[in-house]
Length: 119
Length: 119
Image (cartoon, rainbow over all chains, first blue to last red):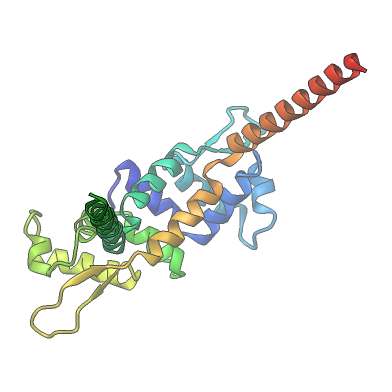
């Protein structure tokens, strides 16, 4: 499995339970028990998902021994989003931009025609 | 492995070679041979990556038997980006919004103070 930062982020996001955990943490810090409550899975399974999120840098955990709240870290999400945004428009986007450019050229030609008539 | 649409998309993006293939396809359609050229991996390995991308709906392939160009499909990228954007601001975003609201309240209070002085 690739272990570059972006691959770790996307891999961590490739699971509905992990995405739900992140969505919960976007509302504020929470302990493992609080995070596990709405899910019909074991605390152990939740812990395993949290480890994947932690390895991807998507969460950090408090250092207090007893109460170690999880906290969402948004930097990897920003990186992931930036990658997607770069290619989202794709080929269609290029056609849209081409269309915009053609329209601008046509408008220029039209204006030039009007100016020529006035001369 | 989860097989919901969003998980398939994120899982397909969790590999640098697959991301490079998508980046190339964002510049226009290409055949498997054209896609494989810049990579130091076998055609077979490229084909395997393309199958993962195709399963996630990130690419489609032409139906001509001999020349089957791959084409980027941007809809799954839009979905993935929308998911990330929803949580990217996270907890920090909530503090920013809270700060904005407090600033607005202070400005209101300040304006009210000025008005009271004028009365």
